[in-house]
Length: 102
Image 1 (tube, rainbow, N blue to C red):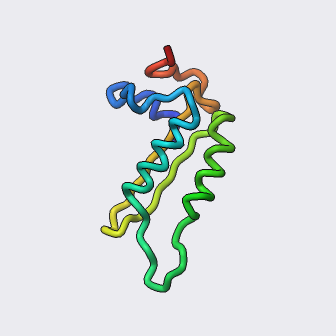
Image 2: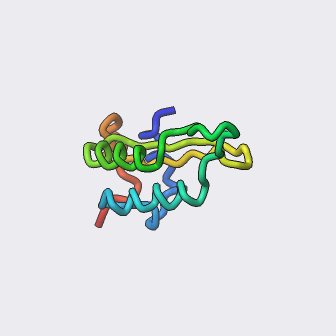
């Protein structure tokens, strides 16, 4: 599945998850990550890239129209995945934005 296809899920569009500012999208990503932290390995090693690394990457690519997905297993062994999809989408410019900015 391509992340840009999420723009076709019109019924899942919400104003509180539509941003025109990268900083607002980053706040959502960080808050969601912190609410669902990754599991910690028994040996103390890091299983996933550090949050700071993820933030640096996302701040670099989102302004250029590149979608960002963060996914990891939580302490309860559940897989969590959250994505910021850019619109208009770089790879699917023919798909209209479900909630264009005012």
